Length: 284
Length: 243
Image 1: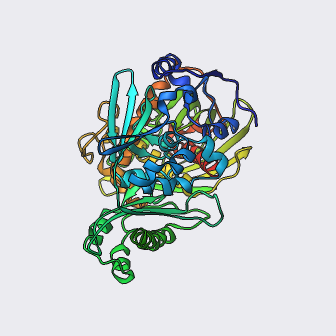
Image 2 (image 1 turned 30 degrees about the horizontal axis):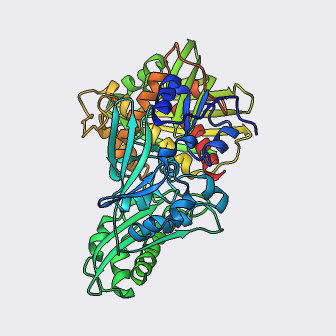
Image 3 (image 1 turned 90 degrees about the vertical axis):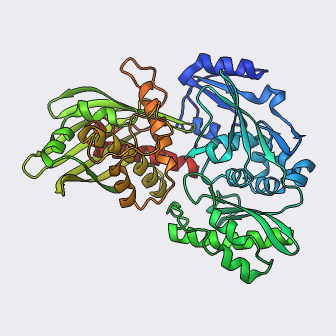
């Protein structure tokens, strides 16, 4: 299908982009990589009068270190994130989850920040970002603010980024040396996650000293499995103990029921995948 | 596709019945809804809904095909058409009010049909979204019907934007829907919804898009309709998710 006609703007600075966004008001839409927005436009599920492409704002791209944080520019494409040595070293969970996103074409066009702002409940990046306590740097007419991941994901496709704001970068506290894994369960390749589990653990003397577990597609927003995180502390890296600690991963969640599986099936998947993710993270 | 919802409002049967038969009073409770006219049993309106990249404006008409005062049962038919001709949507909504303790139980069943390009969808997401939008709607209704009774404000993050606090009613709705979901969701939804509502003033702007037109008007009247609209939205979302 052909989208409804719109005005296309490609500002070269964040200030310019914010000005355009303010000017367009309700009729403006920010485009990052366009891998979700373009299909929506083509289906005519949205018809903004102005599309503001952030692709020419160089300052929004790139990966760097800032003290204890790894800083990923919102417009950094997935393939850069997935192959970046700093990410591999300090936030390997992000790299592993990113590698599961869609297909190579999408990973070259789609962006890290775009996927997070899009906040698809089945998207693979929100849960790892939540598990790692990422901070989201958002700029708007009123200046800049940093929103913790726990407040960033508001609802289906809805984040803390306001209508007149732009996500500029994501700050991820370094987890150097942690074991990590992302388990994405699908029936066919490149499907959206039926359920996904992000795990990061710190092992000391053969036992888990700290654990972070994020669940994908187990609700409208990513979920931290805090009970499991606590239960894992002190666990030896052996299947029996980990299976016991992760058995409750799906408890209290309200996942969707659809053609791919009902809610009970997803809750079961969550515990199975959490066990696998923790075991794989321990072996990593 | 058939959907059903049940909730309890903290008002006597007669009061609730009257409220549900007052489109002007009810319409503002549905996020993004604007009632443009009411003529006897027929009404027209629009609903604007924003959800992530999706932004829709539905225009349509609704009609009370049955309004049984004695049985407290109403049947509404609504239909709409996408402005750009991409499809149509129709809904038949049956609302049944019955006494429930000191309040009134409202049961709504909706039969929704959608044609046109976006006619492929599943039910999971639809139910999810419709439950949420309905939750907001019910909170708002509860406020109107029993501001001091069953409505107990809970922590309200988006107070500035969201006039409707969490209420006992919404809790029961959530429970009925089996929604164990986290508490913050409805609140944020409310904030989002009421901001959507502001965008939809009478003077309002240019439509953004529409897919299926709809049921909106309907929602104005009864909550049933809102549900239908929600459903439409959900459908759209679903389609989009499955793209």
